[in-house]
Structure formats: C-alpha cells, structure tokens
Image (cartoon, rainbow, N blue to C red; front, side):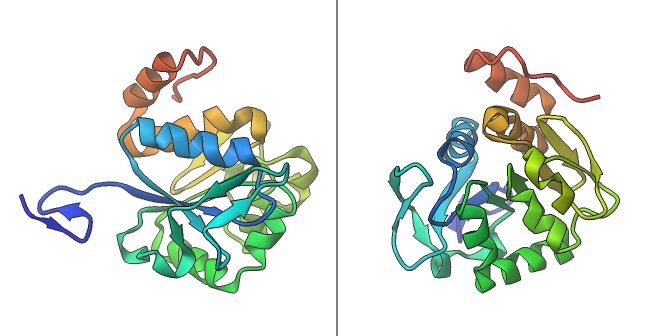
Length: 200
C-alpha cells in the first residue's frame, strides 16, 4: 500500500504530539512518549519555542523531533500537554498552541494534559461537566469539572492525569483510548506495572 502523508491508504495510523515548553516536568513528558512509542503509536516531541532543544524544570535538556510550525495538525490525532513549572505557564502563553488546542476541542479530537497542565483546559472551559484530575494545588483551576483523585481520567476525548507519580497511569490511559483495554493491560504487564486497573 502506498503511504500518503504519514498514513497508509485504507489504514488509519495514530499520530500523537507531545508539546514541550521550557520548564516541563521530565517524567510526565518522557514517560508518556516512551509508553506510546512502546505501544507502536507514532509520537512526536514538539518544541513550542524556536529551538529544538528544550530544558526541563530540573535542568534536563532534550532534543525535540519537531518545532511547532513543522506540525501537520490535520494529520495529528492527539495533543498532549505535560505539566511542570514554569512549563505549564509557558505552554499556556503560546498563542499558536492555544489556537491549535481550541481547534482540537471544537473538532472533538483527542486532548491530554497531566499535573498542572489540566488547568489550561479548565481556563478554556474544556472541562465543564467532565470528570478530571490534576495536581492538587491546581484542582481549583479545573473550572466546571467533577474533580477526582484518580491517577488518570478519561472523559470522552479528553484525558487528564494527576501528577508525576501518575505518569504511567496517564500514558496507559492514552494507549487504552487508541488501542483498547487489553492492549493497555498487556503493556502494563510488559513494563511490570502492577497498579494498572482496567476501567469498567
């Protein structure tokens, strides 16, 4: 079959972009990238700056796959926002990123955010009437949401995660959304993650 724009004719291949801003939380970002790639989900690390290298809140510098302007959002199935400070604030300050996020929300395309980053979704009215979780200090920013203490919450096309210690749960929730519960459980078993629980 001929490949067209990253897709095979007749087969839909999942494409995820994880967005990095200076001050991101390393585990929340990189554990998710790792899990998705292990699951065979095409995942790009994207810088929201004009530099390919982005430094985390704890001084870890990682080279990205793409700059923001290189992303083809028409071919992207999910946007993921990791937390961390000041990473979350820097993500929210990126006007092009917020415009793309609003577009995904209006089209009901998959959106994920973990730790402090769900506050961005709350500020934009995306969590109203949904179950959602975040780092405890940011729960009051989840405007209109039914706030839970779960490691990760799936509410239709939006997935939220509670914090760094829940990064594996969050990543598995994304895998579950794309590939189903059995695939997520199999991946959890493969990485010896004994806390994964399939959702009802």
